[in-house]
Image 1 (cartoon, rainbow, N blue to C red):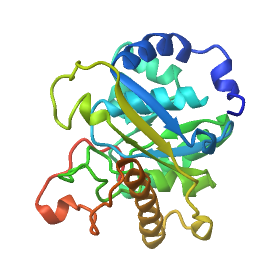
Image 2: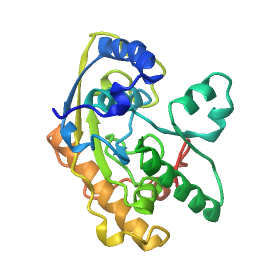
Image 3: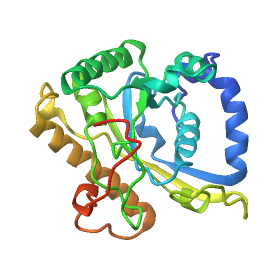
Length: 251
């Protein structure tokens, strides 16, 4: 594997967090990461995983740290106002996101993208915005938050899929399934999504729709490889099934 990023080798708040989180997660999950070399060793990136368990952010965070980068997520702006937690989120460079109008959201995206490039940071964005509603845990319809960030400043857009986390904590499950310990979880990182033809069109709905479709297709293909089966021909759309989408972090 290539050398680690300076953001991992340089002392930071991630070090004590990793010392606590990684051993605990490793008790529950035996994580196998494939394709880690496709995540840039330095500079900005947007990493877009599938999402079907409340536990999978910890799986993704450990995988990204093992690859050699600091795992930063988009987080609700309100969390940054929580004592102690807000301090940790700011010190680790997590990216705040607020519910805003379309015009304000566009400005926010431009500022966040520029900051990622300026500091050479990556961010993990769940393009589905919440846990998938698909009955069989396949990726559902994506939202445009991840591609907006990537298109705004030409940041690499990297798809990721993980499978096995549902054996530790199923969708909407209240507690963890502790036994047996070290359940196998596979993580697969894909090639960057080719959106070169859409660069400079980050505010155009058609470009955002096309980029999001390419991203969700890539994530689904990675998950098909992990599951060794084909996804449904039609992607689950909560709107067409009368379901309300909650907990979303992008639009």
